[in-house]
Length: 422
Image (cartoon, rainbow, N blue to C red; front, side):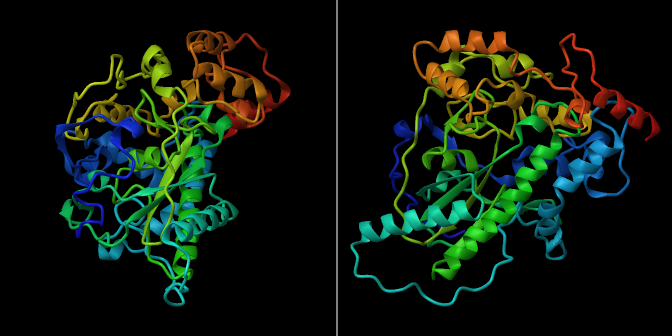
């Protein structure tokens, strides 16, 4: 891979401003070591259960169970939600590409030619194009958008080949100095049903939406005469770039926490040479709140989430080295996914920042969490029962909430009668 224009330079946004603590022993990450890639080549991660986990997504031979949230209709909806993203991922598998997961998207039309000439000062042009891009992105469906500079540290050293089960060269062009980061919100009511196959629908819809929006924004950039490389899980670590782009802060559970949706987002990024003004990181008290909160680590069934202070600890090769932060044991996390036969977002469901911010009380809670009142805010959150799991049959039309002594309504009774016939 040819290095980007900021390779070897200090990023415009300092590590201190972004809240990064990067040590001298820092090592860039190869995508081959990502736990999902390892589940194909590494016997330490790959098991018969992990193979079955993937099979339920990619073949008609579903493995459903007579357990609420894991029935045929739950898996049917979950897999339907992934359909758009899967089509693009499988489109070029014949040439060893799995676009959106292991390789950048390429299903784009050529632009009409070079950009229009401008006599505006560079800063003015970059500011105007950034405003235009954000306006266009929101019209095309982006829930959140931010802009930052290329930072080679977070770009994978190598891509991963599913065909050969080894590393392959990165293909990111070397002249793309800006990164556009988008976030797509996941459905809060579906997330409330975690753990369940049904809840995986929130993830699938998030990815499918991410795919469509990324491709549309990238095509807009191409139509304006600039280069664009839309990427989702491939090419680079998304969370550090999202933090630099002002989309949120890093949480104890290892996820991005946004002001607008908490941790309930999927991320995508576009590398481009379009001149763009950069955003700055936004701090709103997440680190300070996570330091005194253990909601995610207490609720994590495999105990994969750090209980203690940020450190440079690594559990296995699926953790990046040389960064002081809260680190999740990816092997424990993925093993739980495989054993329950669907993805898990319990940490997202119980996170106090997972709220409906269209409600005034939620906005007041967020303000409290950003002040010395955060312990009170956390106590109120626990008292409210906000993070409690909702029974999947409730989502399908019933009224029962797990953990509360509430009689099921007629809709829930009808759903259970239907389940017995499936």
